Each structure stands twice: as structure tokens, then as C-alpha cells.
Length: 177
Image (cartoon, rainbow, N blue to C red; front, side, top):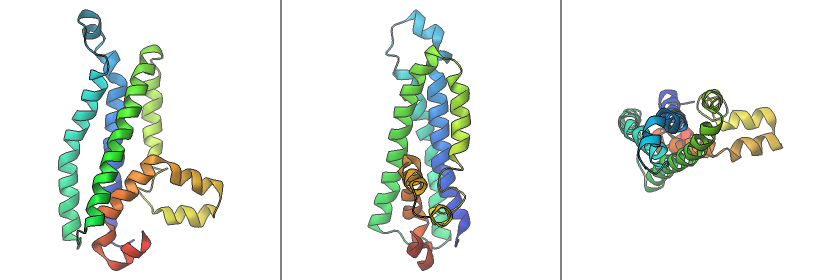
């Protein structure tokens, strides 16, 4: 893969922000249990705030990714910028939805937060962060496994970010997407 550092960092930005948002949102209601019991607040406030904190942490990561992409020869185009924004929005919406759901379930079953941490760790290996999706296609062929892999919404978000920052750093990268 040409410009592997940009490819890797683009995927890590998406997966790490998703993991931070979902993990913190899952724990947020239980962690603020005393506050929830003492005053009336919408319970959704805590997971939403946790997701917003992850979004704030995302900003410098995206800045470093863009600088690295420019150094690697990134030539921004309208489709690439739209893909980058769409990938980050998709990841944010997915993290917020999963965080709200898992925060509610974590109130009833406290072990959910441990399972969430494990699932987020597995997401690095089930998303095209370390390797391109074409390697998965070559390995499993045109089977239901490839379809399931590509239906992973985090895979879609990572690939959109790759299209926005990595694909145009060299002609062979653009051909690979």
C-alpha cells in the first residue's frame, strides 16, 4: 500500500474515536448515578455529552491526518472532501446511537461495559484499518463473509475517510478504492 502511514492513521482515527465515544457513553449513566438520582436531568444527556467529548478529541486527530495527507501528496477534490465529512458523520451517528442504546442496557446489566470494550477491540480487526478490504475479498472470495464484512457500518466510515484522505495521495491508491 502506498502511503501506508496515512492509510493506517485514517482508519485509526475513525476506530479510536468510535471506541472512545461508545465506551464512555456506555459508562456515562452509571458513572453519574448519584447525579441522576438527586436531580431531574434527561438521562440521554450523559451519553450525548460523552459523544461530544469524543468529537472534540477528534478535531486534532483530523488536523494531523490532513497535514500528513498533504505531506504525502494529497490532492483534495470535492468528492474526497465530501467522503471525509460523510465518513466522520456516519461514525459519529453510529457512535451516538450505539452509545445511547448501550448506556441504557448498562444500567440493567453492568457487565455490558466490559463486553463493549472487547467488541471495540475486535473492531480494529474487522474494519479495514490495518489492511485494505481487497485483501479480505481475495481471502474469502465473493461469499457471504465479504458481504457481511462490507455491511459493517464502521467499515463504510473507514473507507470513506480513506477515500477522502488517502486515495488521492497517489494514482495507484485511487485505483485501489
